[in-house]
Length: 100
Image (tube, rainbow, N blue to C red; front, side):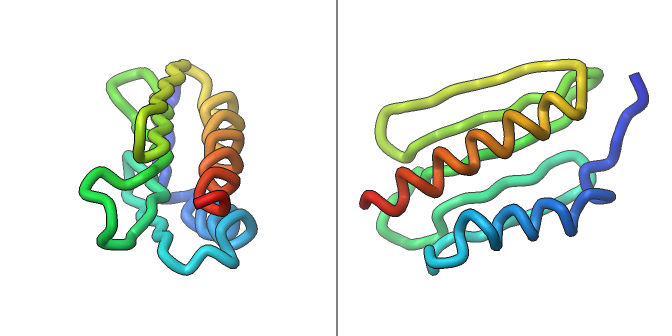
């Protein structure tokens, strides 16, 4: 497996954030070389809802946390599969944040 820098897809992640979370004012997207996270940035919750993609050794891990009780984790060696799951979890997070 070739280690991929998430930072190279920075524009892709920011565009995804804009498309799913455009009307949600209290969200942020942070991108580094080995991690991207989209999260609720209000001060209401000490453990905010988030979706995160991390590179750990030879694996890509995608985490979803709804801020209350639902957590999900997806692990793969394939970057494209990890991106697809990150997009699905992001869409789910945006839908959940609109409800509350």
